[in-house]
Image 1 (tube, rainbow, N blue to C red):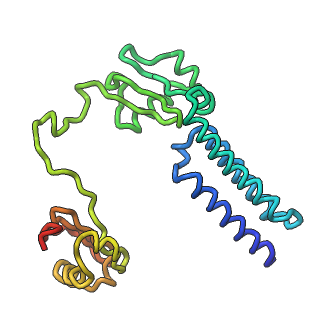
Image 2: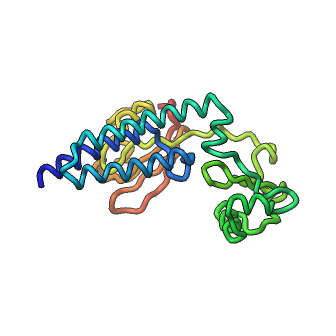
Image 3: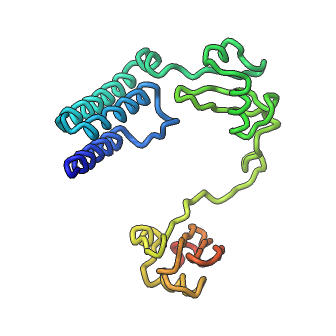
Length: 237
């Protein structure tokens, strides 16, 4: 039993390393050859885990071989457009200003229900709202709406908004994130003071505390509802 546990942990670590080396893509973002490699890796990993008569190396070596193969294929697809098209395919225009391309639909083995479901997922409930719909090589659909159905932008409204800024999480589940605190030009004492001021609590009781560049923040205790607050902007302290 101990042998199986040790082998399982070892194989798990190797597979984790393999996927880290392959990148952080989700299943829906993978190219066809990447998905095939992923499925093979998953199958190979289970064999030495369950069958102790197979040496662990006989499971690890094929996994590492597939990683090398993945890097080679990725490199070759960058160097050769033809090879990239062969392995990953090309984006296909499924909907154009004239409507649905029936030949493309059949080529992709899709039905009208599939197309409508994809459009609804993008927030469009009628084909008449769509100018173009393109099926990417990963299988996802990109949609360009017609002008009258496109959301208005700040440029359309001639507005001059401030540049966007990702909120910084200062406290997460009762723990101060020191790197983020430094990024926000704060220190541990100021974070504790902020928690005391806005929630009358201690850091250990905070579920999440985040702050934006403008000074707008959000705090929620583990047992209370969250609330927004306004303080001095970052860099003004």
